[in-house]
Length: 91
Image 1 (cartoon, one colour):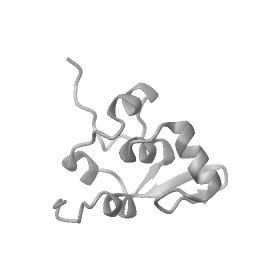
Image 2 (cartoon, one colour):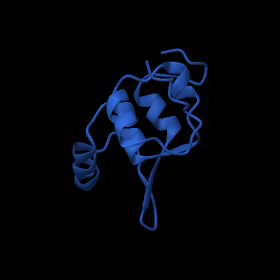
Image 3 (tube, helix red, strand yellow):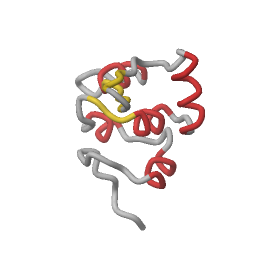
Image 4 (cartoon, one colour):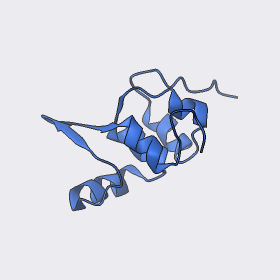
């Protein structure tokens, strides 16, 4: 059995994100920092990295994506709202 993923870490391995795709616990989601990388956002909403990239390029990604040079991040608050999770953790 593997240890639970610590959501306060800055980075996750590709394997961790793939294994967790669409299966994040509410307390883990509430523990996310203010912004997350698009790889984490893809995993949270349950889409593969390639599909997430396709949606971002087409402008159909379901939450805002911020660009800082070559770095793309997603604000956690709209991501949680998409999933119906409020600030108090209630879905």
